[in-house]
Image (cartoon, rainbow, N blue to C red; front, side, top):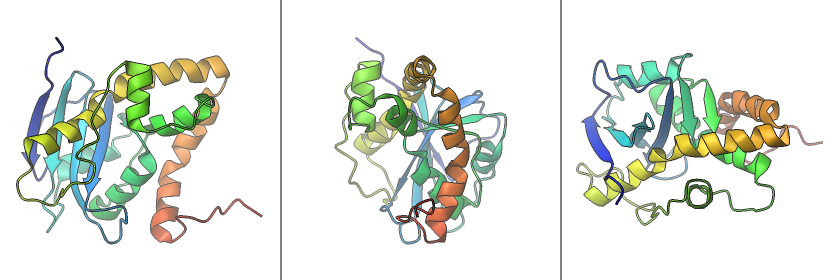
Length: 207
């Protein structure tokens, strides 16, 4: 029987002195999918050790110096699934450009060309052998008190990203697409800024 993940909720910011290592899985929860309208409510982080740290932000101030320092730390790789959204919403509300980045959704699209299913649930099942629930995906993340189901759901979004990255890295190397993936990851902060600036659905590279 697998060990239950340890989930720790922090109010406002990460605690002083917390070391999550050199590769940190991160995800966010918001009130919707429009960064200009729907505020950032929660960030969840994992070092890949089976535990998750949840940060419930003070939406009146977003005064979270430890979280902001981690996002901006060039020596720490930030691991996301669909980084484009998370990076944009954190830039909007925390005022931080997140770098460097690895996105499992982009990696999947570059190597899992045999399928059009690149969701987190699909990758978890195929690459890690874990079935995760998306039942709380539509949920009130602005609530003052989060339910246990919400916290379990939020944690599940980051607990398996390290293992997924390892599997995807092997596939990228096998298919000769590691450098292409890295170039795409490096572009993500710019892609996020384009989204925020008003070009979310426009391909500026098209004719």
